[in-house]
Amino acid sequence: MSRVGADRLERGKAAMDPSQYAQLLDRVSDGIYFVSRDRRITYWNAGAQQITGYSADAVVGKSCAEGILRHVNEAGRQLCLHGCPLAGVMKDGNPRSAEIYLHHQDGHRVPVTVRGEAIRDETGAIIGAAEVFTSRRPTHPVDEKRRRDDTSLDPVTGLAARRIGELRLDSLVRAAAEGTTSLGVLFVDVDHFKVVNDTFGHRTGDEVLRMVGRSLSNGLRLDDVVIRWGGEEFLALLPGVGERSLERAAERVRMLVENSWIQESDVQVRVTVSVGATMATTSDTPESLVDRADHLMYVSKHAGRNRVTGDRGAISNRAESPILGTELPWQMADVIDRDGFGSG
Image (cartoon, rainbow, N blue to C red; front, top):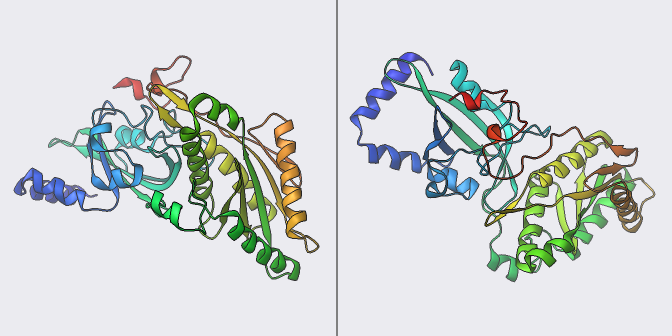
């Protein structure tokens, strides 16, 4: 924003009652929040609550890195440790934008486009930053009543039920056999899921399955189909992809699940997934295709879990390790403060 534009905005704000200004921002569907120089959230609008699930009461006064949003990008970089758009904005005042994944209060990852702008005082000094973020996916998850009443949906996750998924699989396998489209398949299994049920109970186990399902869906394209295959298993159908695109998608969803968590009191409930990724051939049947993806998933299991195996072998994991716990990341032991978060 130009200095002239900023001056006009400030004059407009001065002429407007502060409560009117807040009400206006609350009518914006985008998420908007402000942070001070010490990275504490000072304002959080209704759009931010709609997209993230976090209310203003839950986040104002805290840092978004304090076990709340914990942004990661597609490559798995932990932006709370380095590369944070708001940190850059507060250093040089230049606007920044990025496509990232934020953490939803329900645990899953949400793809958003973020734009950061500096907030200045009357002298032009930077006193904070504003972030505007827009969801790249629908922000209205399937509610419990629809999951229960709609027989085309899995009642726990809200994903496509297996019988519906099998119909879609049949049609896509026929199309691949006829050469009218390519088809990639991901077979995804939650690692050590029984431990979650035994430790936290089946209610939390169901929440974890919803978390995994939503992170899978949000890591894929809108036209891809994610199916609750059974138990802790998911099947994803990716029509029109090539082998390299399939491998990138598989590693992306693995990374997103690893960076998802449910907060149970002081405990972060986390899981990982093992993934098998395969391309359909013209001679495949639905059964042979799923069996091959399932076999590759078990290769990932036997190799140590939390990894992807494709038709060409193990797929490299270049993502950074997740940030664990709810402390400020730049105050954790052995963390290099590359973005200068701790400098105040």
